[in-house]
Length: 452
Image (cartoon, rainbow, N blue to C red):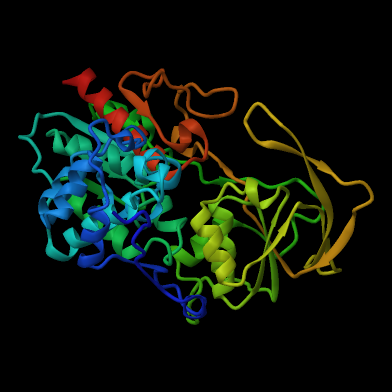
């Protein structure tokens, strides 16, 4: 039995840096069956233990091997409302695939690629997920249409609830729509996943800023329960001199302009003010998305991170893709000042070299500034990708309790307000799509237990 993963098609680096089309092109039917045939179908499948939404992984892989894609899709959608999304952006290498027995003596099963294959075939062949139960007369409002909100909505709709989703932007999907680039997650895929939820009866209202157009108190009076999946969209900055310069952006703004508003197009109504040489500060997936997006705009794009490559929090695959695309990595380097001219335009940065220190309680190595290492680098654009925090506009005039960190305080998913629940980044701080989905599932389960 082959110990190596079957590799799907992929755009060449030379081609993909000239477009925003998807980099990974997925499996052919033959490749999917070949990869599925590598699965050992363990009696005690550890992979399922590593899946935050508890997909019956061996069962759906067996269905692929038997070329029964409709069955595979039904198995996946019993647990996941967004399989085409998860197959693309879920960090399987740190979750289900990391526990795969095959990985002990070779490469683990490519669970994410197989999930994506099934979901894509379901879209092509118009498969439907499980039909919802008879309406139970209960109404739930979801605030935010990101992965937490959509997952909660899907699970409740399948259980017979009437579900209304309120989204502040003009398109549904939350971070799936505005945050993740087209070359990793095509917006047509997000739209089709959203449409699948609409077929279950979920109603989605866009351009509705809860907290202004409607208050949380009003929603609580009109619905039997409310779920807050408002995410964490407020960008963080370093607080260094020069950060208010004209050409300093947050990664959120760059990605939103590109993904949601088409800012990369020549006729864009909200074009991006491009520089010739840009530094993206950070090392996570958002930083990688931003720097790879800038590269596609024809910018000399650098990633600056204060730790070494081993400590990069971004997915290994995204780091490899970035390297292939010619992204320059300035590691163990940290900015201390942004240099500007008389017009407050960026002309460079003062940076210092860093050294790794001891491993801290969080499992990460500390960083120490290297003495006498201050020097300057030239650039005309800086993008901060340092994480995000919640923007609690939806909570205006409510008495909802927050933690010391400014996050929504919950007991499991319950807030201090009656029949108001919360989950995802608004509760945990910025995390992954799949962890937000896990929170949405937990909230749906708790809502069912409480109000039925």
